[in-house]
Image (cartoon, rainbow, N blue to C red):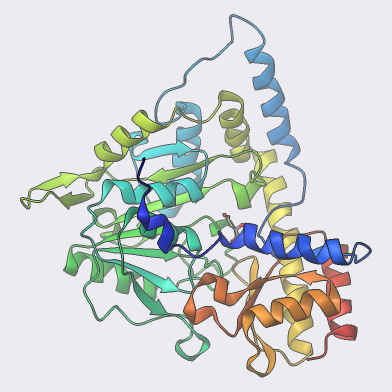
Length: 401
Ligand code: MLT
């Protein structure tokens, strides 16, 4: 009899978002006429930018002709995309990286989930709680438990203290999913210096950096001196340019970034990830990489700006709408998520049921992101403006706060 990976039995029943979808489906089966509005999962709704579609189509046409057809691409991604990433996402911020330090991939969820494979099971992993569940679940699947949870709540301004127990790997997400805050330069410096002192590695998820509106906030961890020696950064086209269904992202692993083997010898992480990716992944399709590169054309940049502005206008409406009802609301200024305190200490899942039943609006219970998320609730600003307005109107008129 084949034996299973017992670590899977330590996971909570289902991954958060399918679990929410299951509950909503059950509700809809009982209430088929209920006009449900989904502000739960952070999924984009607007069409891909025209510049992206144009490049995508042209690349598909290339695939139709023997002379311009592409088979397997270069392992780390096509140079046209990597060069566009380096000169648009990093150079203007004073960050100089090499092409070999970029790994184009099919998503930050996959990359933040898979990266732990290149690290020993002995590492102590720290996460800020509430947390994007992928960081936790993938470490549980690997058997790297218990994790160090660092609670981020309104009381500590969602900026937790450094861990009391020494951590070897630290996941940071800024702008933050789910709390909707963003780390200041001072806070990031604190983590970089902790990592240097403790020889730890920071896994920095910057999937939402396009949503930063405050010019004083860093977009990349490499804007902090010394970060190249301690951090891996994850970026995505999903939330920036509407690629959740198209799939393209990238991960940065500076060549100078090192861990140690069991004898204490320093080993570079970049070749380990290259080995992992070339063994288990065959890259992102040529048309999708062409589509992603079009995000960096002047037209692409302009259209992406408009997409981001559209979502952030929703965020403003939600933030201000809920605050005006007397709710305690966070986030939604530098991130497309609004994090609210459930009224009168209602449990997160109870509030989920209440909101769904009384207003037919779907959100995400804070407890689904970790113990410190209990008593909080997340609303996503991704959605059509009319639906957001309708959801707010229903909350205003129907929710018994
Ligand atoms: C979320 O809603 O937290 C995200 O959409 C999940 C993801 O990006 O995988």
